Length: 323
Image (cartoon, rainbow, N blue to C red):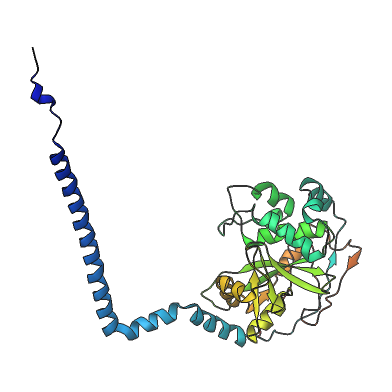
C-alpha cells in the first residue's frame, strides 16, 4: 500500500520561524517576571529598612567583626594579669628511642632541611598540617597520645583528629630533631564556652626566645616588623592594641595590613581564646617519655615568657588568669 506523500512534507520555513519567535517571546516574558520580582523585593526591603532601620543596624553591629573583637578583647583585657604560681623546670629526653624511629620512618631531616629552628619547624608544620584532617569529636587516650600512634592512625587518613593530637605530633617531631618544643592550652573565659585550643612553642636560638606555631591552622604570628612572636607576646600586643597578625602560607609578609585583613577570623578566634593559657599536670604525670633521665634542661630566657620549660609528651605551660 502506498503512503501519501503529504505525510512526509517538511514544515514550511515560515512555520519554523514562527515557532522560534514564540520561544523567544517566552524567554523575554520569564526575564521580565524575574526583573519584576527583584524590583518588588528591593522596594519591600527598602520600606522594611525605613521602619526597622534601628533594629537592623543593631543586628548588623552585633554580627560585625568589630563588635566581636571589642567584646572578646574586653574580656581579655580584664584577664591581663596572671595568678602567682610556682616556677618549674622541665627536662628534655632527647635521646628517647621513639625519636630515632620517627626521624627515620618519616624522613624528618629531609623535610626540615637546614636553617634556624623556626624555619625548620615551619617546614615540618607545613608538611604534616596538610596531611592531617581535623575532627573535634575524635578523642585520643593518654596512653595513645604520642606521635608514633597518631601518625600511624591519622596521617593521610580519612579520619580526622583534634588540635591536641596535632600539637603532640609537631611537639615530638621537633624534639626528635633536637628542636626544643612545648604545648600550650589556650582557653576562653566563659562558663558557656567549652572550647579550647592547643598550639606549640619552639625555642629559636636565632631569635633567642620562644615562638608560637599552630599546626591545626598552619599559621604563626608576627609583629609590624614581620618578626615572629611567642604566645605571651601575641597576648600582650592584642591587649595593648599593638599590631600583630596571624600568617599562613598564602600571606605576603611584604603587605602585613592585607595579611591582617585576610586573617580576621583567626585574629578574632585567638582573642577569644587567650584569657586562660594553662597546662594540666596530669599530662606530665602520665607522660610516656622519661623526663628524669634527660641530659639537659633549658630555663626560659625571655622576660615575656614564664620561667619554666616543658618538653616531650603531653606537656605545656601552666598559666591561669587572675580573673
